[in-house]
Image 1 (spheres, one colour):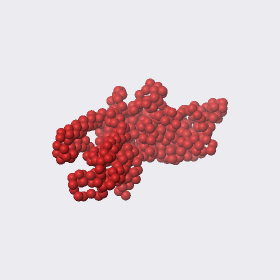
Image 2 (cartoon, one colour):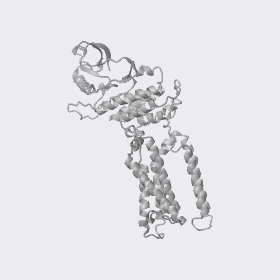
Image 3 (tube, helix red, strand yellow):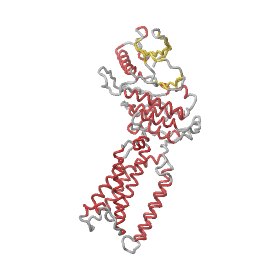
Image 4 (cartoon, one colour):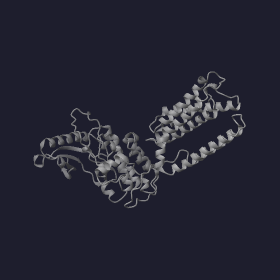
Length: 488
């Protein structure tokens, strides 16, 4: 954009940095409009007062002899640019976490004032001689809301930013606060791996990659990097802004937790490492590796008990065949589970599908089972009256399971657990009635024929909700806020 000079402030007797924006020098109406736009944005930036943002002391224009180039007078900071540090290789993860958190705090301050940076990259991050961050070049930012001030000047068809760090929505011309978080994700990826998340020969290639390609996990390039880094960086690099951290402050807190974690021995990334296929974040499955085997074993035992009890009252081979089918399906599911878990890219795709597909499948199975027995006799009144409560509770629980995200609040989660408890009571009532035990809450919450199918769907629905609730809670932008609120 121009040149930066060290200068002496003669009035206050202090050393300052003067940035001359020679790019905007020149005559004509276009030059005047560009300088007016820059100076108005610089006035917004000058209002920002934060330890990690370079302070702007003054601004003006140099004069006709130098083309009226605008200039900024800023605090003089001793240290080194982050781009210079990156030339020596990858950064220690704890330094990356600390610096990333400080950048996030600076962005949070700017976003609260309605200012976007729109060009977060290593050359705009300065590391002072004391090891702290100073974010530079907010002078090219514009207000997040184009109507935030009455004297706003706008320009269409002009995109501010650097393609290797540009968020998809910013590339489309619609930047928002989340765009700065995406650039922060690119920056963190580069700090950890000494390379960008995408490799391209030119600007168009970078923009295309940001719009269409999935980034690899940092640990696939730098072995030994904790999976928590994969989770955080890939969340920042989500194509959809709503899937990133809610605010820059949330991202900063997540980075502070990584900084506070015990240091881990991490190997440096290999030089000139080839680009690896995209990989998803490494999440530990809910319940650990024993849960799938436990579910399979429970299914086999329950099937064996039902077959031995001869629940339909007929001594034919139908029970044995049904039991063999259930065990076969459970075994196929178990094998498929471990195959999917061994391939992160598959796991990501399956997770997206099962969020909605599994609840819909269970709902379809339940609907077929119930409607096929709609004319069956019911000793406690009309069939649909008796089944209405349990059906409403079951379908609501399946809907809650599909709707859960990492941003779902406490109220909806507790309502889901209430529905899960009601379904559990209905299953127990159903089992007690079928086994002749004279303990029941109400016949109107008992699952109707065929009881093994309807009650089995309810058990699976409760399991699906609990697993998804735990998984979304763990992946929340600020996972600790749940436990802290509940303790208080």
